View 1 (cartoon, rainbow, N blue to C red):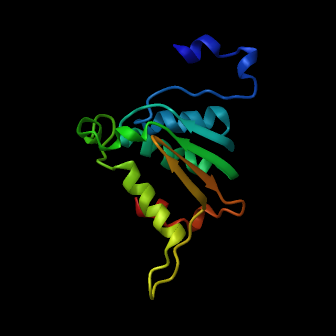
View 2: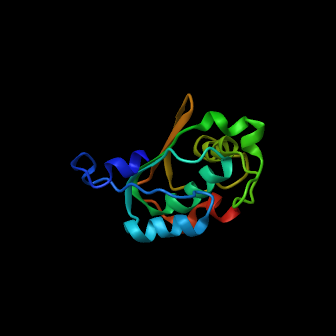
View 3: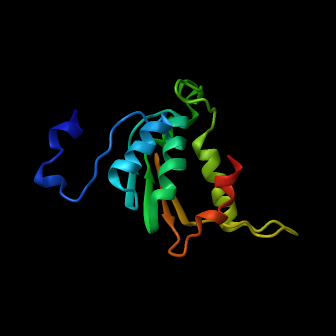
Length: 150
């Protein structure tokens, strides 16, 4: 409703607003196709199911430009029992903060005796209810460990 009201207005020039079901990979693919991808910034202020947030990240993060930013809002719902249950069309019981912690660990820890895993993430900054991720300027999506694991 809010997006429809302002879409096409001068206030949103240069901003591409995308709406639809984040739990549906087809919708996410359509967003990338319609917008051309290559995003400077993605602000995920959409669905409140973990799987919706994670599906969006997994599809949209590769379309973020090197040096770009990705914001995830509404993180506080991640541990609510109702929000943790897989719901159609999502088929995942992923908990987004747990996935982000895995990524964070790769950024700050090198496990003894193991080779450091590659990441295209430059930083992760979290505060109450939201996280921001920055993509490395020299990001190589083919070498990202976490994208291959799921």
